[in-house]
Each structure stands twice: as C-alpha cells, then as structure tokens.
Image (cartoon, rainbow, N blue to C red):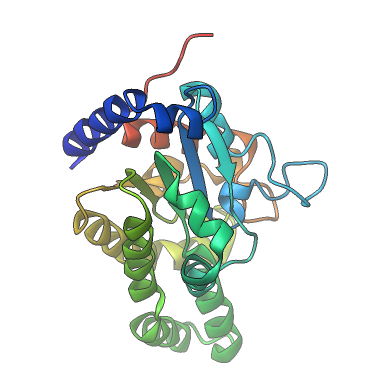
Length: 249
C-alpha cells in the first residue's frame, strides 16, 4: 500500500506541476496540505491560546519540511460525526478539500474517550462491568462507519492522497486507564488499518506504535494531547506515509 501511495503521489505531483491552473491555485507553485480532524492536528494546549491552531502542530511541521502550504482545519472536540457533517454541508471546508494535494485525517480519539468516560461512570468502579460496557459501546458505536463515510466524502472531492492517523494511547503509564486503553486500541486500530486498505489513495500512519509507552515524552502531563515532541513524531510518520522528502532550505 505504501509503495502504491508513493507512486500515486509522484504522479499527482507531476500532473500538478505541469498544469498552469494548479500553479496559480496553489500560490507560486506550492502544493497544499489540508489537515482534517480534532484537537490533535490543531495542536491543542501548545500555543499561547487555543483560539487558532498552534504553529508547532504536526501539519505545519510537515508543511515546513516538505515546503507545502498548510490549511489546518482541525477542530478541538470534534468526533467522527462532527467531521462527517461538516464535510457534507460546509462549503468552505469542501472547497479547501477540493483544492488539496495532500490530506491528513485525525479523527476518532474523542469517540473513544467518550466511550471510556461513560463506561467508567456507569460501571461504578466494577472492573468486569467496565470491560463489558466498553465492549458493548464499541460494538454499537457509529465511529467506524462514520470513518469510512468521511474517507468516501473526501475522495469525492479530491484525488489527493490521504494519510489516516490511528489512535495513540493518551494516558500516562501511571494512569489506570493506560492499561484499559491498551486492551482496546489494537482492535480499534486494526479497523483503522482495514479501512485505509479499502481505499487506493489512503495510507495508515501508526501513531499508536510510534508513541508506544513513551507518553511521558509525547503526551502533555495531566492531559491527553501531544507535546511538541509528540507532534514531531506525528509529522515524521506523516511525511513517511506521504513519501515526502524534506526540502533543504
């Protein structure tokens, strides 16, 4: 899949560079990367305020390394349903995706966190009941269907290669939920991989393995969002998935 996406991206690059309209659209020949998703691509809690995406968020790091024009459209708090509705109804968002040469997609973490929070509240501290509730909620969640619909909607708007980031474990090692999350994230991320594999223009980026058990370095303490180092890791695996080379300045 990776090799095919690299070939696809190379063909797309050749076509866009050879098209005057694309040259004008992208602004002096720069290709565009559109980042879709939640607070992770937004770079939540890494800027002076959370009123606009942080410049150290991984989409901007990819843009700096590969000399791309970046439109960071991540929205803190969004779940899969929010992004799907926006892609179907928001004209500005649809226009941005239509003109993209590269698309990153980070969505689903908030769906999973909500399942954990509600299951924990309903379990009353009973570990066995917690396990059953999480499994029930995962089985009935619309998140996976929404994810496929999101990719189909993006693909209806652009032929750009899409990198789909899976879900890293956001809990520190000393947090009891770290072990709980590790019980279910391999299952969730296997579905992400299967979803990516079902589309010729989608490549999965394995944030889960890249973060591993290094939450002390890659996740903000008492938070669930990536540190600057975590954002750098996401940028690295994103560049690799897109087969983009770092531009020497």
